[in-house]
Image 1 (cartoon, one colour):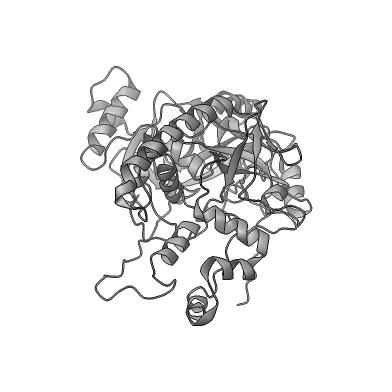
Image 2 (cartoon, helix red, strand yellow; image 1 turned 60 degrees about the vertical axis):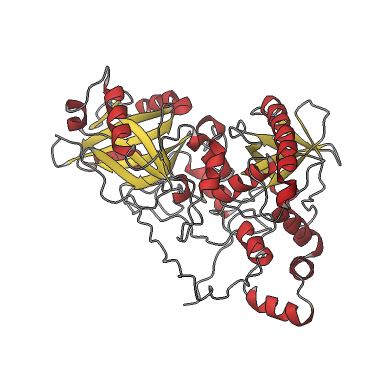
Length: 497
């Protein structure tokens, strides 16, 4: 299954955590819309419709190296955090990540300030056009493509000097995983690391006319797909369906999953899709008010659903103890910070503040899912018990996957059995081969907002109308900032320079 690619993790010595396994895919569920015009007409038109500031360079994603899995691995592996690598191990060189100025994430809002769709915007000078012509290619999920095209046409004035077009059948969209190098794209291709987070892979558009002239096929799309596959097969294996798994493990909701919701509830502020300093744009009032005066009480977050009889993985045990006991006492209990050895561990952990929920990369989440579903066994298990344990986990995992896939439909409620209160709404189907889904959760019930509630590893929930009890294990994507418990927004980092 697609999530097993997590076992092929690359070390990913970058500032963005571990990478997913190597592979590529061609998207069949994306639309490519075009907005073009001479001079700055296209930019001016879109500037009034998107949340991003097209007159400034896009910001790079937030950097984060250490996640909860790495912290526990360092502890269990006997290697002190912050200590030097053994002499016989070469220190891994940090891999720089280059982001193109030509690709950014953005959101389109309606007049109420509610999301129509998210999108990736490519800016280019189209092949064969006048040098003064600017074109934006809008890579958008298929399920919101028609809505966006109608929205663009609605706001195109009769005398507007721009052209709108649907180029879905002329241009193809692709992704490559397991690499941080998007430089040197072949002729006829646009390439750039995903501007939301590089763990989502390298995004590619096939745009060149020469590709069509040099390739046989029944249609332009077929020719482009064949050319791309021929190009990639020498370097990467085909991995169709990877993105559907990867983005949910990474906590990225898109398309109809976020339609009609507010931008901050969908974390668009965390992935640099919103500018809070640009001029007016459609839907700005609600977005600005939420940022500067409101409290964000709900956000979309990845959630793993497990059986109440399953052993809770260590990152969630640690998070539950931190929430229950507080940071200092919880750290003492987790890492054993008393006695002579405890003092050494304290030095190793100096500066580390554990998050209130596990902070896990998509690759790390995939590894945990693989172990829980019986694809691989934890390295600390006795080899003699491996076969029996694997079979047991596989049977349990397949049964649970079937249950959750059928039960957890978008729109279904997540209900806390403790007080029968609705604490979240499911917004996505499960990631294929897993029980991980995206849900809009109340931050207070996750221990992220206020002090009244805490998340517990012994929680019990109901999903929709079902009366069977499950447990939910929420986790924070690496790209999330620290959350201010008073506002539900990212904490402001003070600059003391």
